[in-house]
Image 1 (cartoon, rainbow, N blue to C red):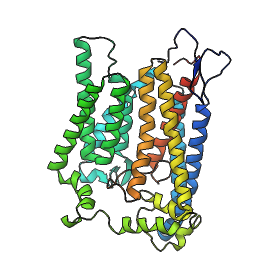
Image 2 (spheres, rainbow, N blue to C red):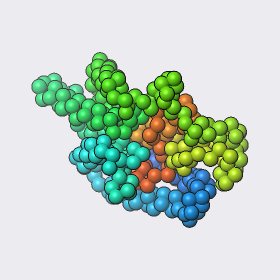
Image 3 (cartoon, helix red, strand yellow):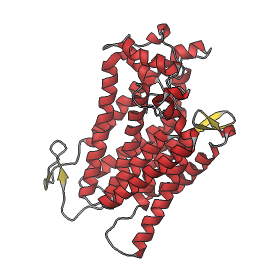
Image 4 (cartoon, one colour):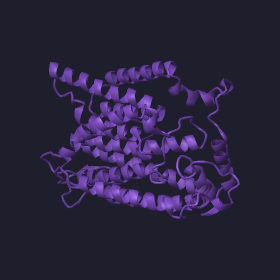
Amino acid sequence: MLDMPKEQISYDDITYKVGNNGDKSGSLSPFTFLCLVLVLALFGLVQLYSVSFPIAVREGLSHYHYFLLQVIAAGFGLAAGLVLYFIPLKAIRKLYFVFYPVAIASGILILFPQFSEDGYLIVDSIRIASPGSLAAVAAAFMAADIIPEPDSIGGGLVREYVLSFIFLTVLLVLTLFSSGLSWFIIISMIVLSAYAIKGTGKVAVAVYAVLIAACAAVLFALFDSISDPVLASIVPSSGMKLYDSDLSRALLSFADGGIAGKGLGSGLEDPFSYGSAESIFIFPSIARELGANGCAFIVILFAFVMLIGVRTAMRALRREDLPSATLVLSLTLVLVLKAVLNMLYASGLLPLPGVLLPFFSYSVSEEGMNIAVSVLLYRMIYMIGRENAQG
């Protein structure tokens, strides 16, 4: 999967110049990415405990209840990631054989009320997973493997384009119904970036983008379950109100935190207490405790994650390794777009609920998925950044 060209190539991680310096060991990006993920994960756990212990105490639980479950989830995610770490990269690309049917099945099941709770698939009142998150990861692996590389012309290539289009469109439509517009946007961005990387052509990418938008518009117009959450905030006169008491009070936390914040654990005296402060609205909770400085720090961390993902994809493209470039950029988008959409929604800037802040929001299934994806990303960044890497 990571076949090197005959000429040995090394990369300068600062200027991104290509040369033939055989003394270079490779990119600094793996170490940088590892540090970023460690900071995000540890910072997220500390912040989750600070935000959640007043909530746990009020609910009659142990003060470390949410923190402990998140740590356990991170441990399982790390274990799953380590398993993936030792699987050949060519085999990892085939994981959509597992994720795609699981994502389709969970997306269908969540349409039934007995299997659904707050956007999660449940079994015996236990939250199992977010169908949207499963679909996003499935889309990343599928895009890397099933979208053809147009290095030849013929009926077989056309057939592969048609099949990839059908499979990905089914996943997109089901995600829109089961998980909402936020996850639909994330998966659409993954698919479009994959088609662009694979060299499909600007016209083909534009056509697919128009088809995705048209599909969303039709379903948006026909089904209230998709349109109501968005229209509620855009057209308040409709009688629906997305900016309910929870979001309204969450927004007050930004102003209350100011620049420096009220300090860790200040939730005990929080006059703007609101539901889901430890999950969907943890960003305004952080704003109250750490202020604008803490929020800016989180934004910067995710910006660097995106930067490393893009630079690694560029390195893979220089090797003409399109599947690796597609997969690493797609998995990066899964993490970063979730963060962006959550922060925009929790800040009252985008009426698209349903996505949690990676590494910070409380969710056992999401935390495990985020850690596992991060370990896989580290492995790919390391391999692609090495001069003599073999997949």
